[in-house]
Image 1 (cartoon, rainbow, N blue to C red):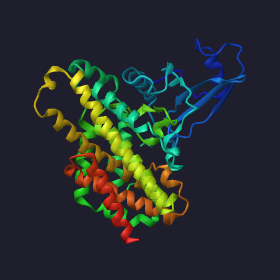
Image 2: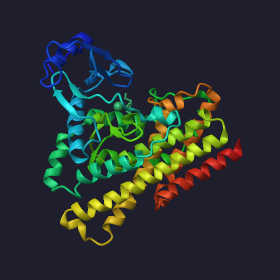
Image 3: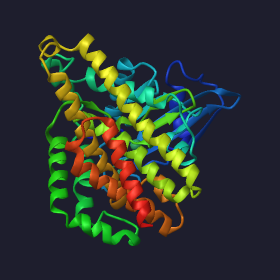
Image 4: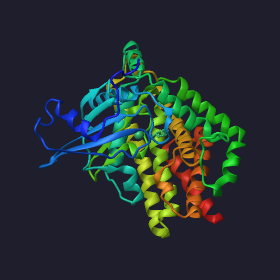
Length: 410
Ligand code: SR1
Ligand code: MG
């Protein structure tokens, strides 16, 4: 149903609007408002009180089209509802892991939420080679809790199906189906890539087994309602300080395969790994940072698995608790799925419409091509070899092997 009162807010209207929300600012408060959205889809206003730097909120308003493309790409406003409801659910399951939601307005497709200006976007921190000692622990636990506790492992099947309905998100899923699983694998109009990697991209377009495996992973994305997933879990959807981690932007949330979220976060750490081929030219510094990233990937999975197994012991429904071998089999399939989805995410961020700043910020096209090529080699290997992995160190060994092989060819 159309949102009849929907219109795009100006900064002035945003300040008038926020004063009417109880408990935030007084009617007489002197406010400052700045639109600061730099993502692909929405407006993001930051509102502060002139005399108090401590009092601030974010208003995120969905546009009826994709900001990155313009009005020619209409987009559902319902994604604002999905996002606010997912944030509230995630906060219930994993308190403090997401910004607090203060207010949601369905008609205006906007959400008023906690301002996280003390945090920075994780991706920016990784480009600057920062280290975040608590990140793996927080994200591993977030993934385990949000995925396990929204799945059939923990929920009564009827209650779970109610949630599947609540989070039905077909238009946003369609973006992912096209941009992640379809367009990068043929000469689609939406693709854009560095002309220096054309030969590798054409190899991918002609690789029948790879395309078969991508289609199997796409089938999982289309058909499996395993858990409530974030749906766009890249390092631009995570904000950090040295000690804290917050997950933002779940507007792509829906019931889908768990491995899609785990894979996305792994892929984006690996894309950053590849980008240091262009950003960090001193070999010792590069290898040390790349090792840090691989250790972080291992830690995320290890913590995820520990927490998932604990939840299985404490919260799994009776029918699953004692079924011999099921838990190990479930986690093995999940690891393999995660690697496959990581591979898809890596390739689409190099060949498809939406690239990552990690690679895009390398100005020299030749150096950028080096990182992009490495991402495409790793991405393909992850998809093709995922079913040979039995533990997370199989992934990190594979990446070290690819890196050494590529370095020998330089
Ligand atoms: C048109 S949307 C392009 C991409 O931005 C979002 O963050 C998702 O990753 C989507 O694929
Ligand atoms: Mg986003």
